[in-house]
Amino acid sequence: MKLLIIEDEEIIQTILTKGFKKLGYLTDSSFDGAEAIDKFFEKNYDLIVLDLNLPKLNGIEVLKIIREETKEIPIIILSARSAIEDKIDGLDSDANDYLTKPFHFWIWKGIFIRTKYEYLPRMANVRDFLCC
Image (cartoon, rainbow, N blue to C red; front, side, top):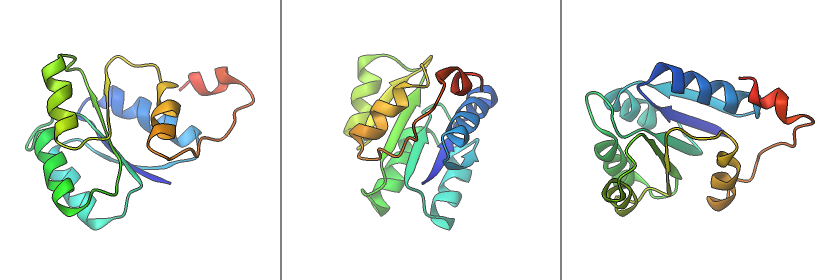
């Protein structure tokens, strides 16, 4: 499974990339909305993780552009915005889920299950995963 991680904060981008790679996923990264749109049209992705506070194009703009093209790819918003209005805006813009920062990485298992992407391999030791 190939993921596109659209996140402008380098530390969160690194945590997500390392965590997903430990789980066996292929990842691409974008640090701004314009670059994310370019990558989306260049490659095929199975799931997109999308921040809202992005340079060049904000997350809602990116979401709307992608949704004009396809509704098939699950898009999970990951944002520091925790206000109910922001969550409603994201979900009303056709995101599949909305996760706020900070987050515990294992919440992604539930998100993948809900979006019908239950591909997480079993890990022998949770500590191996948590040490990103």
